[in-house]
Each structure stands twice: as C-alpha cells, then as structure tokens.
Image (tube, rainbow, N blue to C red; front, top):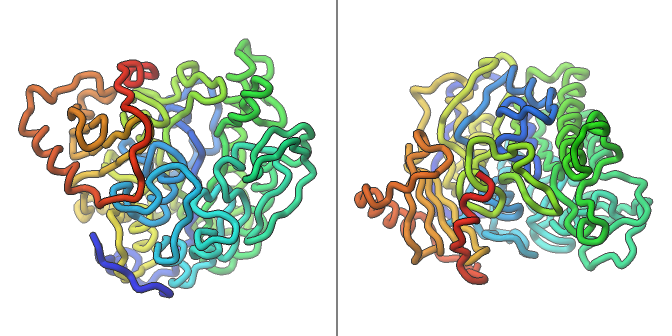
Length: 470
C-alpha cells in the first residue's frame, strides 16, 4: 500500500476461510442514482419494468434492510469507497470537495490484491487536477463525470476519460464552470457511451480478476433542464411507455429506470459471452432514496415502497435502498436476507471476497458469510450511523429493531421507531421508552468524530418533511 493506514476504528480482516484455494472472482458493483426502495419489480414496483435487475434477484440474494451511505450523492459515494460512515468519512455533504491523498479506497485495496480496477459513471469525490480524481484513488481506468453538477446533463459537451476531457458532439450554450447546463443539440447520450465503455473494459480484462465500479447516472433528474424547459428527464425515447396515459415527466422517469435496467442486462450478457459470469460477483444498489426534483412525483410510482421519506431525509425512504447480489454457484438463487447492513460494508466485503488480510480503517463489517449462507458466522453491527448537513442538520441511527432520528443534529429531540413493526416510521415511541432515548443519545455522541462540515441553514421541522412521501 502507498499509504500508512491509521487504525482508528479499525477492523482486522483475515483472509476468508470460505474462499481458500480458489481463484479471486471478479467484482462488479453497480450503483444507480436516486433509485428508490420501491422502484424495482423485485421490490414491489408494479408500473416500471425492470426484468434484468429482477433476474439478478431471482438468481441471487435480495437484501431487505440495506442502507445507503447517505441521503445524497457525494457523501454516499464517499462512504462506499472508503468504508467510513458519515460520522467518520471526510466528505460528509454535497459540495466541491476532493478526497485527500491519505484517504484509502476499496479500489486501492483490491488493486494491491492484483485486481484490475475501473470505474464508469459518476465519481463525485474529486475534480480535475486534484488528489481526489479516481486515477489518484486506486482506479486504473475511469470514464464518466467527476463533478455532480456536470452529471445532471446527459448530453454534455465533454466526458472525462482518465485525466482528460473527451469532446462530444452535443452543444450546451452558456455552459457552466463544471460543464453543467442545458443542451440545445443532443447527439451523444452518455448512458449509451457508458455501455460501450463498460463492454470495452470487460473485453480487455476478461482474463484477469477485475473490480468494476459502475456508478451509472440514471435515473437522476436534469434540474437545470427542468428550470429552462420544464422537462427534467433524459432518454433518447420513451420506449414502452410512450403510449401510457401518464404525464410526460412520469413517462420519462419510467423510461430512465428501464434504460438503466437494459444497461444491467448488457453487463450480464457480456459476462456470459466471455464465460465468466460464474466467476463474477455482481452487486446492485442505489446511492440514496428517490427524488422529487425536476418535477418528478415519486408518489406516482410509489418509489419508496413501504418506507417513509425521499432523498435528503434520514427516514428510511431517504437511505434504505435495494441491494441485490448475484454469484452463481455461491449465493443461493432467490434468497432473501434481513441482515442490517449498508454501503459502509462494501469495502470489508470486497476485501473478504479477495481473500485479503490487510488491516483497514472502516466502520464496515463483511457480509460475505451471509452471501455464502454461513449465517451463524456473520458478525453484526451494534448500530449504523448517519449525519446530514442540509435543512438544519439531522442524524439517524439503526440499532437492531429500532431506528432513531434527531433534528436538528446534536440538540434536537430524538424520535424512536420500531422499524420491524412500523416500517413507515409513523409511531414515535420515544416517550414510552426513555431508556432507548438515553441509549441513542449516547450513540449519537459516540458514533462520530468532529468534522470540517458545518450545519447550514435553519432547522426544517415541518411535519410535511416527514409525511409528504409516505
């Protein structure tokens, strides 16, 4: 490793006994952008078709209690890459921050274990010429967006390959500093380009173990385009939804999710073509809950399913997300787990799959035993922790059957829910359970380290924030 690892909140990972004597499998991690807990057929969606992703669930394991690293883009991706929750990672909110040289990523750990490493999609953790660029954080190859605002635009004037801008044929008048804007001429659709780049990486690396992080940008809205044109969706055509008696916005939203599903299908198909599907672990999840941006109405599709809230809330609708893992011959087809886990655990799990015995700083726990049906050997979290700095700031903890939310962070009243009996977080049981409140109050203090991030804005204590998208 190029860095000295600071063993703060460290967890030692010993090479897994389950994989001794076996070759290292490929690892593909696919992360959608703003896809809700209820947006997939395998999670109860009735209107949007997602056959390829649902087939992953049919052939693998579906998680019911899996949590994103945060409720918005950048911190969620930071948690995923560094294995540190938002009480400990460096990037704890959306902004223009860059990972530092001392930050250690899962890509670095896997690269040290002999994996070829690549990313296609949105990075969001470092800008051009900084230490935070993917190629400075363990990735051999990168193709996509560095900046989050640039990633709103599905028809930009350029895309990044490794450290360089690749010009595209689109035209964006009044283009912003970070490449953001609204295209007046649309030729090159970036999700289509990402499919080509994904196929190319698999073709090049098919004969060696690889880690491929596919952070596709669908179905995120184009907020700038909505303000200018009234349409915040972006797909070449509406496909099977063109004749639905829905609004244009709803048709576009559905088409974006189904286009994403097609991209996933292409990945599986290429692995099958090369005969390496059985040697590949595929993870599929989302970076946070569904959004209400650019005119999107998540209620129309019941995008958060049975949970309450959307993106930017710390109720489960903002952070509980789909997670499907397929590994033919290793993971029982059609299985389901209620293991409380999250994106914070991916680093530990990937290290375990690779058979690594490195010591790494992380808040995560490998869920490989669960994937392999070794439930009796699965270690469990005492609790999962989140903090979020918008809307006055808020905190949340999942501890066993219980979930706590505090608004504003540090000083606000603590709400407590039994999310096994009350998945919608409708019945606050804090008053009847002062001992639970005391426990959560202590964990809110112990579950974090000081941050450079400051709480911005006033507390949004509106009841509408809690119930609007139930």
